[in-house]
Amino acid sequence: MTLLELEDVTAFYGPVQVLEGVSLSVPEGGAVGILGANGAGKTTTLRAITGVVRTGGRITFDGKDISGKRPDQVAALGIAHVPEGRGTLADLTVRENLRVGAYLRKDRKGIEKDIDYLLELFPNLKARIRSHGAALSGGEQQMLAVARAVMAKPRLILLDEASLGLAPSTAKSVYEAIARLRAESGIAMVVVEQNANLAFTVVDSATVLETGRNALTGTTSELKGMDEIRRAYLGG
Ligand code: ATP
Image (tube, rainbow, N blue to C red; front, side, top):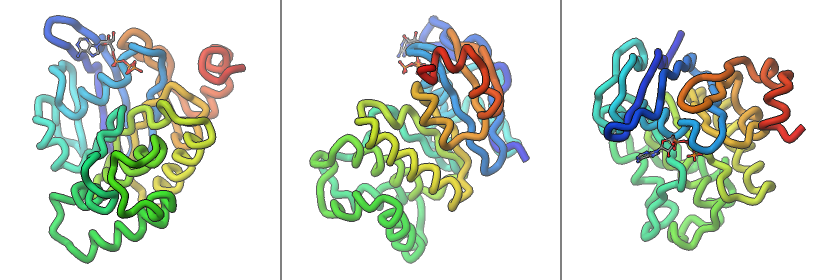
């Protein structure tokens, strides 16, 4: 079943139209990539889903039209956003950041169980459980941002450029944990990445955006086989 569907979505910053008609379909438990150059509209597509930009077209989640809903309403429906730049709380410890992610939940035991699971998934965070957000490395902050999103028990995670600013080996281990999380949790994902090689370790299919439109869409193996993808995104 389709969990999230974007049909011909447009988006505007004030009078400026940035998305010209983007379509995207994420099956329940599936993972779909959004690739493309700087400024192509990847981040704006996530903002259209979370309701922070004015949009046109149709966005449905779990069969319900969510276009025009406020960000808090979208979050309450089970969509968690891990923004570019991570947004972890600098003055709170790792454990406190994780608890903040669960602020809408009441099941104390479940919350502690999920924290234990996430600390096992991200051993670096376990070692830094009492450290403040500000003291973490970029990779640790990215792991914490993902873990915090999971604490909300979402049905869908929107992940924006998780590799940004990280050393290649760190980015690789962040994506390994995301792939494992996906396999174990069944949480659906939209993965925005400039690094297609990393995105392809997690997603089943992807769309390439160019100036606010879908330029190419296909399964991961179809896209890997396309010359233009190899040249532009896979360094080949
Ligand atoms: P990046 O990797 O640089 O984030 P992106 O594909 O995510 O690229 P967007 O951030 O969605 O691209 O930006 C799409 C277009 O919208 C760009 O031309 C950008 O300059 C413009 N834009 C982004 N944010 C705003 C804003 N707040 N006001 C006006 N224009 C904006």
